[in-house]
Length: 554
View 1 (cartoon, rainbow, N blue to C red):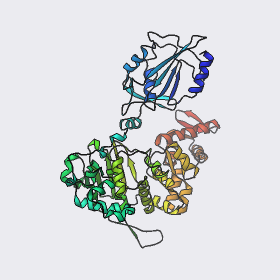
View 2: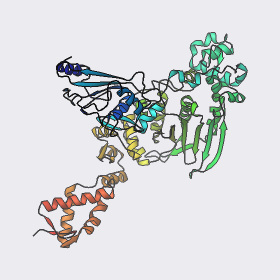
View 3: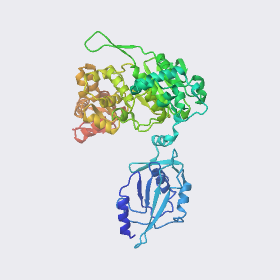
View 4: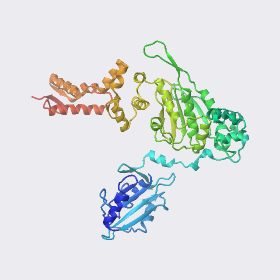
């Protein structure tokens, strides 16, 4: 095709640069194929492959797509370039990686189009011994979140819990556990009530999704297997309950094996779910609630069982702290986009780590369907004015912390006096309370609803959020956070210098810094004082007569 035809072809098929498409104007290939890391061809191939795969086009002009053409091939040819790249890009799929050369029939200009496959299953593509990715228009070393996503990719055929144990049989299952499973199955599936009495154990196990065509699966052993049959699964199929003191010292522990459908009740019974008393506004009569709603214990525990990565051979842990909080943890990554997506946007998991086990647990009423369980936990905490659950996804684990008391009475009062706050509002305000970093879109949302003030990262609850409480301490804290406006502090400085005659900068700092917003760091406060002095000098109100010394202009 001609140069004009080629340009139109590129505009039609590759109109935009994004994570799947990159245009580069290298001209000379001598130091561009495997040259400066983060800027050469192999770095871009790594980045594109580590997302969803795509296209790299050289040599065309950025944005205009004008054909530049390769002017210096060095010793590269269309025949040998593929082998050079494969030798420098670890894990790149050689079978689906292709390079096309197009030569303009009228100008003889040549471009190369690299068709880059998506990375292979659980194999990031490396260049210069690093995995790369695109973020906006930037090529950067892959972040831990993206790397974890690739390393923990799932395939349906990888469902550890659906594997059949040929050596196992019905004698390896616990009769009491089966009876418990039958009872819960009928609660969840009343449509089978009439015919249920005709089922033998094997038919029930198949119907409940515990076995496959009468063959014992790992799911069946996990949920209703005898403890002595644990050897089929490995010694890691356990739940450990641990009681810790306020100082994080071990005080007591117990380890439970299979069958999980029975032993989750044993774990539940271990947790000291005492009464929590607090005084509502305007009364001397206390309200009493359990520190943990029973659902807020069972749901995280059952979720840990359902979503545990059993291939990591770790235990499920339930840690109870004497200062009234619980931590549930399981091995593996959190599969949904985020907790907020599940809770706020009603966006449950589209893929499960253990789909066979999850299906069986749903049939037995052990977990909620469609992600509703996590949202319920948030709502139960909200109704008590307790802190919302905290999730931690570090170290290849999912940890959820449930607090069984009010941590901040002022914050609880704000929630109580603002009943119109949505769950989304409270989740974000909970982050403000805990001084967690908020994303730009979260900050924008809270500012639009006038629930926060201040500049990132030093944001604080707004007057609109605090005012309904009529709490003098909260209002005083708000004034301290907000501080006064710039004109107020400039006036203070001016009056101070007028009275002092000649004033050192250190004295001005001692006057102003303690009165500035507590949300500012010491460095930020000093910068503010510098700006006040500079502004007063520009207004010809003060002048510097010696090092760090200020006087009134004459």
